[in-house]
Image (cartoon, rainbow, N blue to C red; front, side, top):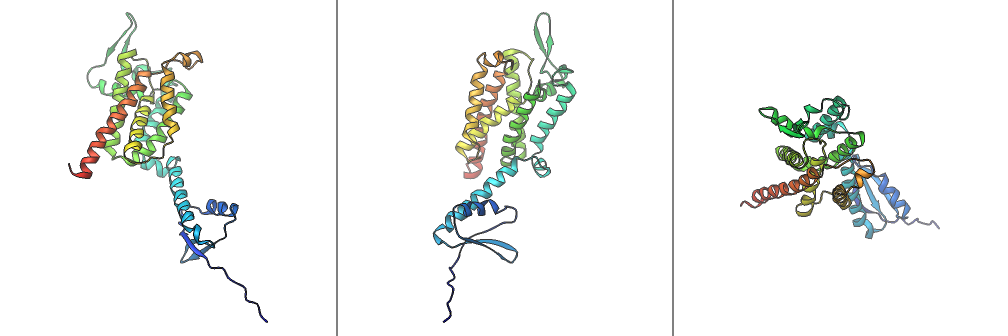
Length: 279
């Protein structure tokens, strides 16, 4: 008598896309002892499961994996991302060039300070004419140490790579310029022209991103980043940073950047609602 081997039916969970490697998902299924098959039909891979009750959960896991993979790719330094992020890339490249030119704040500082320094009596004199346009923005490119430059550049890249993809070109450019102007002049009026860095703009992006994620849609920015930014801002008003040798913080630029970024989001939000609802 011949015995017939029973073949268990398989159920389709999802079709796999070439740009999203499926190996991490398969490894997880193996670890959980889930029976599966990968089939190729017409040049496309598909994932089949023996247990039909798991197909929906596995399909959702694959979608979540694809979203995470896309987010990870957005933050990597690739030619494709650089082309998609001209403003953010320009901010970082300009900061690197200025860092090399000034030897991280040792040379040619007058080219980048927001106002002219008067040494006796101690004061400052605003620029006039067309030069005021450059000097109103230029402090954001000036950094005074490797840590200062790296921290600001990484923060700008992370937040900028999210927001520049979400906002129209001129909306994002306007956000950066307005936050730069507001944070620079607030810092000037409160402590004088001896400051520099992208941190005011970074705080503006944080304020905008927080409100965007709260009221429009999830940017997948960890809440811990917002808590860290607020904690760093609060600590800047204490003597802790000076005590550990980090110098004084541009607190006015940070706070005004954060608030102006949040305020500019609400201006953007009003225009989004008007265009969406027609009023």
